[in-house]
Length: 620
Image (cartoon, rainbow, N blue to C red; front, side, top):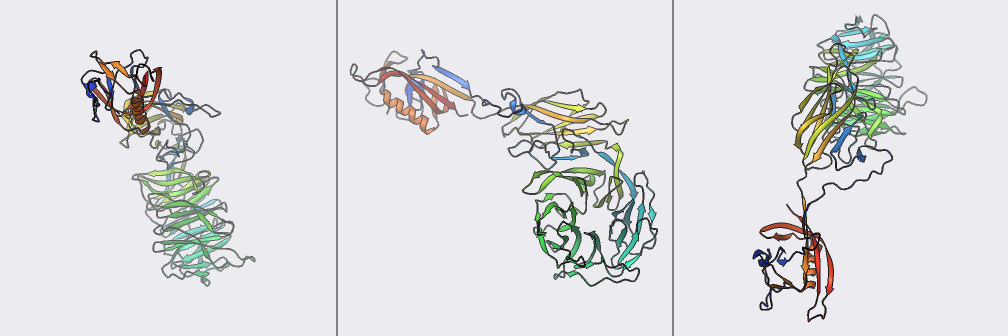
């Protein structure tokens, strides 16, 4: 399909696959693959090199203007303005990402829409090196087991509350505590159950025998020891009363019951053997005198060991394990639909619900903090997998020990840190500093970007906002401490494939209840794409005979040349484009032929006179 240089050469002038010898010899302007051509200088597009537009045009179809309405030919924008759907999202702006979620936080209150503020601090209410610290509330009294002692207070709010020791306890340290609002029972292992009443000064032996777990659920008292469950609801005798016959003995001699919870249709009983955890259910008989035989309501994956279970609002069951926690929903039959695992760094041993929120023990949250997490039953990030919004909450700095118990007393969350003591929320002071990490900001592409500017909006005038930035999972670098009027800030053309922002708030050091309220942030970047960057547009003459650059004649078969160009455009094979001494690897994208004159039968020549505009994409 080659063309003849002149009538005396009856062979194609070039048979190779590289640039044309004719072009190399300077007889033509250009060559495409093995075919050399003369440019049509009368065309407006005789030879054009043009950068490929990086951004396609954008049309905003939404009713309300927003970030998507900004012209993409300006800087690219990522922003945040609410954090109420919680933590656990590592990728901030991928296709399935939620703009109101983030990676993680500490010391930050995220639950008010369109606001990000500091949490209240925590205050130690009682110091203790004991590892059995558990809590219960009976009306206006707060109870705690601590070593061999049972103590109570009527006011947890002072910096150093006054605790009264309840007399009459045995020498055996209690392992558990529960209340029905008036009675307070403590389990003492081989020494059995002891009972006191709200505000009383003493406790007495209630039931003899071995009891490790005690719980009050659906107006019934349930106790357990190893694999045996006892219903002790009917026992009102004083000292000397013995455990009743076992309500249920698990057939596996290695099985251990760990906790009880209540739902609308059933009482739930959780335990494990080896690496297998089971949750049973039992309904109260119609006459209210006893419980039905337990049946399995749900189970956990092998290796995930149940440690606690908590019922809330009749429908929700929270399950703590050695790997984190799960939310379950009780069905009409009482079986459990168990949701996705939310991983934590340590075993979850306690829950406490108030309003739409449930606090959970987040032991060893970091290398320097332990405390509580909070989940919202009003916001679900994945309804199919039963994943509610969650985030870290009240923390104790400088500790990593287990959170054993949490209750609400005098409207304050109160919790225990094993071997350290009892802590409560301090409503009179914000934490000194908290921070939130946004998660990876990639702008939806993996190519490099240049981060240029950051802006933030605040409310308040006391306290400081520190923004740090990380690129490509590296260390965070601070861009300084700022007040509400010190943005935007330039970032010095920071280049990376993805970025992450850390927003830290510092409270005012003269007034511990004052700090800034972050309302929004905005990061401006410029893509730095290194893919195809150039189009070449060339218009070449296609005619049966044309004068070469040396004054000689070049002879073509125009229809064959058009077929050659059309094949390259159809197959999209990479070929060579040569301009003098410069060569490019290209793909022919499309072409357009303009006829000047048909030559069929004219002067013995066939074909046409015309020009062909070829659009090529440079492959770099």
